[in-house]
Image 1 (cartoon, rainbow, N blue to C red):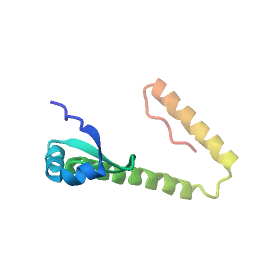
Image 2 (image 1 turned 45 degrees about the horizontal axis):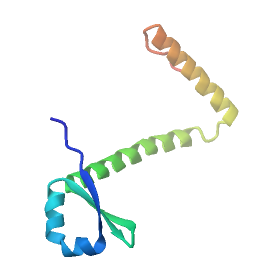
Image 3 (image 1 turned 90 degrees about the horizontal axis):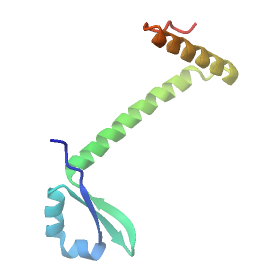
Length: 108
């Protein structure tokens, strides 16, 4: 059975303070609450599993961008025009290889 998406409701900060125990019970049941102060959303109260998932997504995102930064550093001395031409050649080779049902040959 797929994981249930959290139900999200908005409440005023004063309500959250007055109904803290009830609020925790709702979050325990995987309901998410957005707390507003003067009509402006200032916080979200979520179950820890959702926070852990968000943390995992952030780590994965950072790792992906680290790879991009490493690639950028590896080609920092290559002029943009030359880099663009090499990328185009690599994409054409990869697409040709896919159409022919084989792995694309390495560029250069």
